[in-house]
Length: 348
Image 1: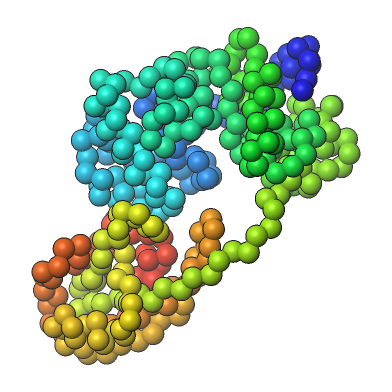
Image 2: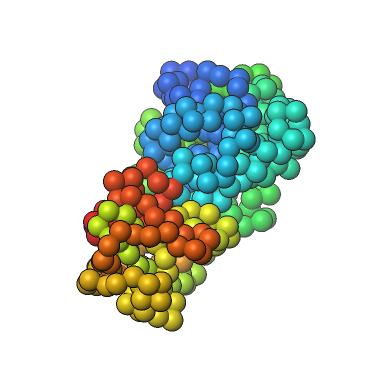
């Protein structure tokens, strides 16, 4: 752990670098609005800045404040989120907005410890909200920051393991400057995202290069240590694209599990496409197997095996809840998981 003088030099160099070379034009910067800071932090979890920016802007147009988000149905929130992935974030976002509206009079708590108790907000996100919305002196420790600290100080071990993470939290807290906390925190984020990248870091451009352990020892590719290898599970799912040429049948997924709460193609379990259609009173014209589509989740790989099933006549309403007919010209704006959207674009 650095001594006080060392921590001051670390922060000072980072602040100077941020002022000259950091990012200053992101749409969620230059605001103290806790709602906008929170929204950006949740969207940026496991998602690149360039991907987030258009979603962030559209989301704010639709839900301009926490009251509007809390009052919206969860289906509308999922629809606005569709394509960003990790949909539990959207459900927690909605739950958090409702909690803030109901229990905090529509205002975000200032205390990071209370923020961290809200749905979907962990310790690092709570600290980021505290820093950027309220100017509170608190340490963040997202993936980018873990990488910067592990490389600079030569921290061994996988950062996601509990002992290493505890060590990194102590280190992050020891480095906090007494002033300029917003600039320092943004600098840490920006350095990890643009210079101290996971692959091919730009060490020559780093303001901390003079005493970086990874650079000194040529260990940039080794630090931080990778997650211990484990076998990734493989799953298959047979899905049906049932269409009359104008609309396609979709099923609302259960709230838990993959694509929770989103519309998706119905899954075929224990029957083929013809049996599925006939059991619901549709007259089949033809069926065609589509090429399989592979999609990676964090803990497993899913192979989707779609079947296109054309039926005769106008698609009728189904008496079963959870089923919807979606016009084919509306698939791009619906709350559909990205792989389901790719299948539909290919099929129709």
